[in-house]
Image 1 (cartoon, rainbow, N blue to C red):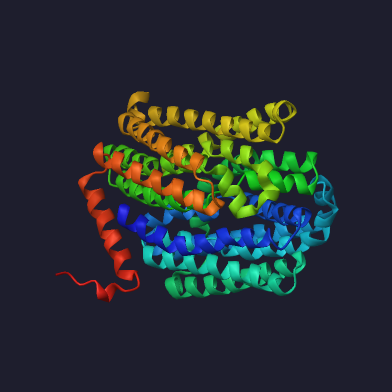
Image 2: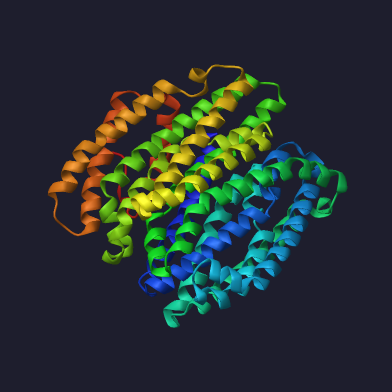
Length: 494
């Protein structure tokens, strides 16, 4: 599982850099209100795109590994279904541009909504490209697609506004990219599946049987995950929303690593279940959680130590008020080590996912106004991460029931405890360095991050938290990176 995951992660890293830099450039071009409008537009895009997929793209991770000659039919069904629902969503949001702008408390949003609908349709129809590649084991192609897509999108968004600093010009670039991606996706699927790339009613019935309950789970998930942002948007002006949105800064590497390893985990689990090796499923789960913890626990700690400098460096002093919100949001990075959604989807427990997400949504809806009244903008994030933790706990209880084991066997508690302790211990010298170094934010981050990385690596090695296979894979990866570095031909072994 580790090698294909590393391959896809390596491909997505290039795209990650481009996608991460995009808002950092835009925040220096647009004022607070315009940047807030940009964030609201893309918040709506992400929400609509995720909800209207009805689980059809994600269902391919479940069906394609076992599909055989029917693979092309599942993919065609997915393309047609996504295109139809995307078109319906585009028409609906275009018709409701005025009410949407009033709901978001931002009149400037209304004339930009029609382009939102077109962009949703283009991206939704092509959303399954990398999923199909991953499900069919074409990890190298998936890695290249992730990297190329994110880099090209960043260029289409940023380059036009460098010449004409207008939100409308930025959105023209977004739509142009969506069209280019759709054309390539159709070309790839036709080449890959040839005559098998056609619709099939029987396959569609099976897909809908899996996807519709999952769609309800996704709907509840998207609503509860974004409820806090929509609430803040409705209660405050666009400039205040920009402050909160920056505090909600998503660390792309979390999604990059978490989604990639979760997808590879699901493929491995599905194959193990299909072969009747259920005990192997638990082993894969334990290995996945431990690997993710080794990355996400220290990442959360080092970001907590450098939170103020990260926000100032990326978004300037104008967004200092975002720092407390960002610090609380880092709790979600720790929870990302538990990919329970992927685990339940392997067992097709999409109704359980729906129930969990509805419980989280109810918790947020009931408490968020009180929390905002009590703690300000920070309150919206506090109640959101609390609901996330509650949902993870319920999902782990369901996993224990599926495996007929106790809660002590659901997670690798001893390795997790060691990783948590090591991650916290490494933060002590890093915090001391950040406290005494008085320099530009980048230099403070570099100093504290270097100290943290050194302390964490020493503690991980001292406590033997990496297996022999993981150490070998890591050394192999470092050797490959060394070969890519400039001047490699000058360093010959003696």
